[in-house]
Every structure is written in C-alpha cells, then in structure tokens.
Length: 250
Image 1 (cartoon, rainbow, N blue to C red):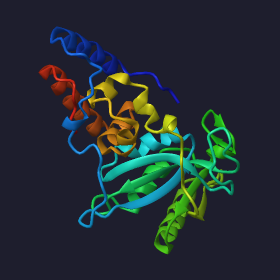
Image 2: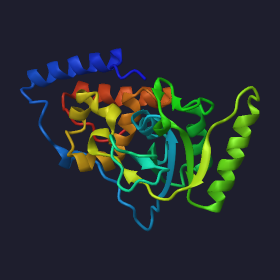
Image 3: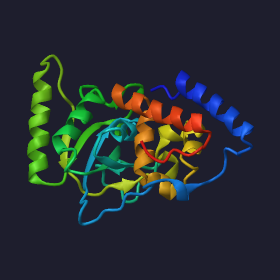
Image 4: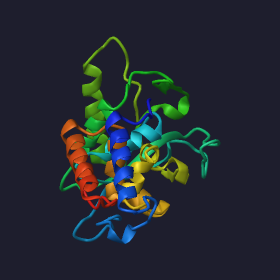
C-alpha cells in the first residue's frame, strides 16, 4: 500500500509555499476558528448511525470510507477479539477495524457494504495484501438483525462471483469497538503536511472528529471517486490562487 504523495500534491505544496512566502504568511499558523464545521455533532435533526468493518490495515480502511457522500466521521480502532483495552502492539485476538459514522438520509448500509467489498480482497487468507496476520482478517460487525440480514445477503452475492475460492469474511455481532491510538487516526492525511496546513493545523481531537479531515483522508490516499478527486483538486487550486492557507469546505 503506497503512501507516497501524488505529483499533483507535490506541485500544490510547492506553489502554496511560494505564495505564502510572497505574502509573508507563515504556513504553520493555526486558524481553526475559520474552518467551517470542523466537528459535526450529533443532533436530533441529524441522527447518525455507526457501522464497523475490518478489511486489512486500518490506515487504508479508514481512508476508503472517507470520501463516501454521507459519511461524517471515520475512526480507526480494534474489534472482534476478547482482550480488554487492546493496543497497537498488544491487540491480542482483535482485528484492525474502522468505525464509520454516517447520515442514513444520504447513504445507506447497503452502500457501505459495497465499499467494504470493493476495497479489499475478501478471499485472501490470513492477511490483506502485503499485511499478513490475524489482525488483518476480513470482518463485518453488525448492530441489528437488519444489518445481519443485509451483510449475509451481500456475502452470498460476493461468493457467487466466483466459486474457485472461498470468501473468508466473517460476520459477527459487534461487542466493543476500541478507538486506536491518536497516531493511527487520519493516518493517510498525516502523510501530507501540506493538506494539514491547508485546513489550519487542527488539534488532534478536532482532526479525528472533523468531517473535512475525514474526506481529505480519503483524498490523500487517492481513494476518492474520480469526480470527487477532481472536485477537491479544484477547491485546493482555488485556495492556492487566493493565497490564503485555509480550506474551509469541500
């Protein structure tokens, strides 16, 4: 799983730095009060739902859901095991997981399942890509009988695509989701300091809960649909042209 910056991000960063120097603005300034909606709070008029999946490394998994319209927040963590309070180096029998908080009025559980299946190889045994180990196994965690029904149907449909190998994905009721350490949150985004500068160098707690950072995390990993990638490219270009180092929205 490559973590290198794309050519366009490198060119954006160079141009952005030049403009900042010309305007005598330090690119490391923090202007979080000018970010629109950095944190989306649950409210009666915007009830959010939550889904948890395991599909390999949670660095990549978190980014895979970030660009989906209707996804508000993503969180890397651990689920599926028996160990209490797992840690990255001591996760026991847990799997690396991602919690997806979404607005059901915009995106449904079926669509999240589609993203799950398309974002990893559910037939690979004991790992995902170059990442080998039980912690990278494929899992769908359900919160209700309806989610169980939909997950089961989707797995059966996935298996029908080919009978030459077995879908290894397990489906189980969610017991506990443990949030991973801060270093693992929005990991793909953190590999691009330029993008962090662009949204005002949010504090860690803000960054983890920010809808904007959630989408940029997917963008940084180049996992957004082409239309969304181009849309964000356009917004970044617009900010650079204006010479003001804050991206307020996408």
